[in-house]
Length: 305
Length: 165
Image 1 (spheres, rainbow over the protein chains, first blue to last red):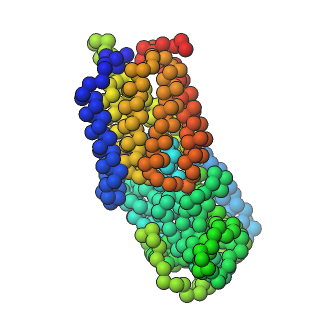
Image 2: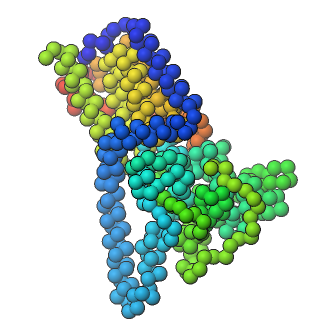
Image 3: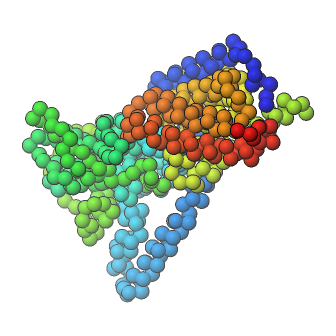
């Protein structure tokens, strides 16, 4: 054992402890822009080799599963190609078989999620792609099941993303059937068994049936229109005759996601057709043109931006 | 080389190995929330063999690294790990630390304390505080302590540890 182990506490120890405490508290209340800058700097300097190691480990963990998925996709594609003589005409169907990344038409960057063993992990995710891959702050991140969140800061080779589990997450949304608009945010009083979202600001005259799919509306310029957010479970509360708040079961689980797609600009076109087959909604055939737009929305903005 | 210097070198080598294991092996184990937190184990092991001041600085550095990798609230992890480092060094003066089971218990309690401070400092989240502190933190604490006990047992001669419980 080291000699220092049995020392009684000195003045120097107390000063070091208090200094560390003061620095930590200062960091806790420092401006968000500054702390994101410090975090990005640390990730890309002293922590870069460790992040690189973790990326290799994540690749190793998922490579076998990915290989199986790719082999299955290749087999499916080969099967379809053998049955159908006109390969060009079947291109759309093959795109459907090859998963979300092939269906999605807006520019995107695939990224691995580097999970950390901390209680706050599902709220903020570390992604293995950064500015060098084209990722920028406010880029939405999606899983095949639906919306996960958005990038809050992008470094050269890594970035951090806020998920729907974060208390500050907000997204403008509308219902698939009926075009009822509102804002989706995390449920502050979620219980252990049902981690859920809230669909807020729904006009009292509008009612939303349980099971209705809630999609991003595209308002605010952060999230493109048509990304599944979740499914309505029921009414949580009503606000004095002017607003209803609904409980929403999230479509994607940030704690269990290993890979995401970061949607890069432009975000002005709908991505609804890319998700149709992966959500709770009935899976229609891939439309040749985008689905009809919902009724004109009220003037609202994503508050997350 | 003096005994103290050799012990310090051995401890540094084990710490380095734990950091490598944390970033290269732990991600392969699956669920991040239930995989052993080897950084925290390394911190507690180091803190129990150091003075309180050095342990606080080590905790701050580990916390800062955690904040950079998962910045739910920057500074929260630094605060939590500083307190854990200091508490582990302080615990050294109260408990007999040259024992594997005592080390493991320190790790489990340290992880729970870390999660408590981290959750309180970073505010509300997707899961209620009670669930985290009653289920996930103790479970991860036990898993981390068990993994730590295995590491300490394997490195018992290297670290000059007692095996008897």
